[in-house]
Image 1 (tube, rainbow, N blue to C red):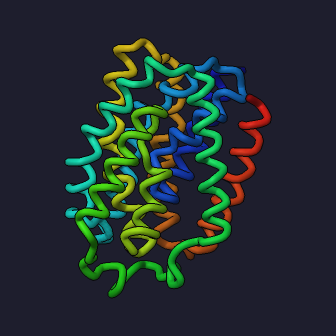
Image 2 (image 1 turned 90 degrees about the vertical axis):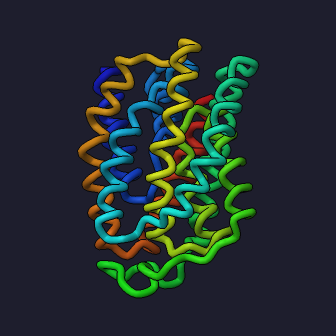
Length: 254
């Protein structure tokens, strides 16, 4: 039953990840802990499983010209070294601390989506004009975002999408669907160094990884297709409710 639960977790994080531009490992960690997987297994095992799903979902956004490659390039260039540093530091922290931090971050972003859902004009389907305009942004601000998210994603063994998407929306002022598109592309890359280091440290159960990936990959594609055709403001509020409830439940479980 526990392995079946990991497969169902994969379905949930795949669909929500594709829908909201997140890799899904931050959501998977508290869910896997709730169904009984121990510390570092719950923290690190979902990370490699998010890579194929985020790439597929990102491809759907790319077909609609929503990926801003300058944002992706700068985020990867700065974020990868920061992710490596954060991943290396996990050996000095306990799994319980990582789970608590993950739950707090999930709760915090859930509340933020409820209070400040993002774009005021999120719903165009399919996106045109404003969504396809070239984005203007501060490279310094982008570098700071990438460094911070990369470090935290390495430390918490997740792909960083649950932090990247709101940071792009709030701090870079990207349109919401462009933010989701860029977040997915960057998350796929940031997950790679974290996966390598956590595998070396022995934190990953490849059985759990495989089960989560089996559920997440096809549903990431479905989630991205739904998002591109949906009113993102409504979906973001629903996602905020889900994350808030999940964060509270995870903290009580710990």
